[in-house]
Image (cartoon, rainbow, N blue to C red):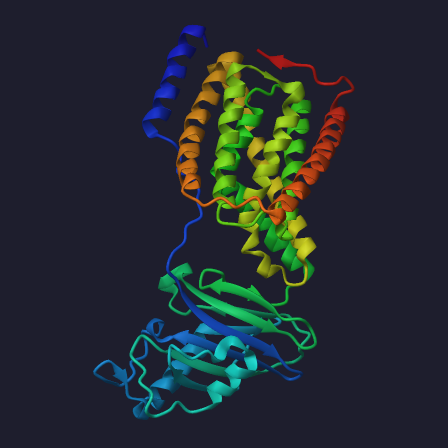
Length: 441
């Protein structure tokens, strides 16, 4: 293709991107939710499920009313119907086999009742009959239920699933506290979209689940993908790709692990700060590509921005660590492996496409400028949107605790920078004995 053909094509690409506008920024949204609370407790020959469900999600059951109040004296048949529905919609599994309730009791409760703070209190509360004079309004109280199941062994693999009001999707959550026999308890939150969730996963189950989660997270993270694209747009050799991507991997792994162990800064300001910094990293790299980049030093800036992206990855991991069971380290490692698999899959597609564009559509230098300008356009809009949210957030005071946290992270960053430099250079040296000195200008 001649140079005259490339210019109209380049202009067309930029015009199309400006017309379409930036990709939608990925943000963390919050919404009003309904919550069911429950306990799963194991005994030598029995499993117990105690669950509290808001009445407004039990649309299939119609309790007798006088005005807006439920007539408790005539509610027993409807309570039994509700127990049958709930026993079907909240399912327990042992070793992959569905457990059938051997017994079930239930009652209606006031919204002000706090019996479900502890398992023992919840069991005792469900066993008592509701006070006849209590005023429980339709759609404002709770159905409390206690199901008993015969089990083969408390050492079996147990799982739970909820299909209560599936039309509510993730807006209806089941908060479960799992109490195994002779072991510490664990808590998790699931929805009807979670499917069947293991209460005590084996290490390989946790690993497989978190690898899949890591792959899904990187493939759905448009900001992370654009950053990755910016990294490789000016890169011409495989040795450079390995060095740069390795630096990114080591850096984001450092902050991802630190965040998983609760070492990241706390406060409402930090998530929007990270989101804004990620967008800024995209803009910076894109502009660096446009003005000319020294690839022999790209590993350094990649490592620094990789630390920020690691915090972003941690947000996708944090709410899912509840499913790790007792295999926290395995799950963290597997999530990171999943991210790397996703990155390699993206690179396997992007690098050949870039090579084709350089050869047939865009000259090498012109291609770097045009593609980087398209990415910078999207990153700039993200940075402005997220920066506006950040400016409206209260920043923390620099007290002794904040300064101590800052000092720890500065020391950690220096340590991570040294590790990034060592690993990136070793990775590049595996493919070539000559140190990288190329420069795109």
